Length: 294
Image (cartoon, rainbow, N blue to C red; front, side, top):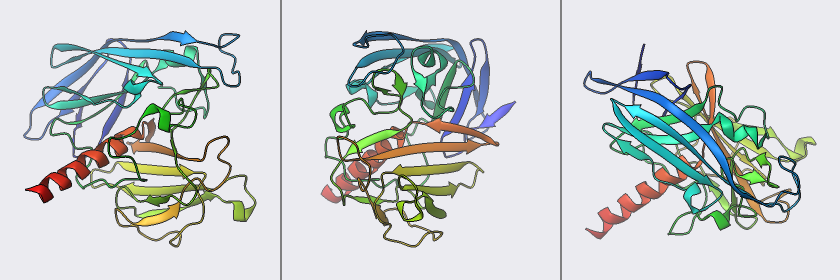
């Protein structure tokens, strides 16, 4: 079976020995096959392995060896270090993101129950030209010009799958900023609303935005700890439109907004790293700036 690359992110999961054939523009195709995947703890201050402990820190690495069109490549990441915010690997006609491996969850709890891949590894690919979608991506929130740093993520640990309290996989990306910080739509949003709301008696306010692309894939973007909305629910949002302010409620010891990202493809839900949206927004901002300087 051939899965078309299309012009938005293509997520899939594989076990060792399995492959997926990706259809490229122009009629050619390339097979992505998983050879192996794994994870290991680099360092931990947990008093008891696998048991969350306040202020404990755990650092780990995870990897996958993939064969892309016969070319074998090792992909490896670290969490939560500066390598949490990484560049995708470009292999032939594809850019490849290593999103998660199942072995991470042999030593971290799954905080939401659906973060762990169903198979050994979850990969996300797009075309080698380096775009995750066909339209410019705007900053979801203000970020310093040099980009995100791991120290910007709550206690320096709450990046994607960061080990909260040393043992719980974080299901999103926390960005520290002050209450009232504007949140803007990274892409055009077809529908949005508050899933939970303090005004309705819930314990927090969580915003959800939907976008269905022409290839049938749907992106679901979420923000938690949201303050008041600046636009009505269930109305379209243009990319770059301010819709709320962040760090509004229940921010813990550091004021922050929690961002999460999910892709629905062929009826299957794939939670993935929101860093990809921040990465593309920075690339698009740099492109705009370079054009202005010409």
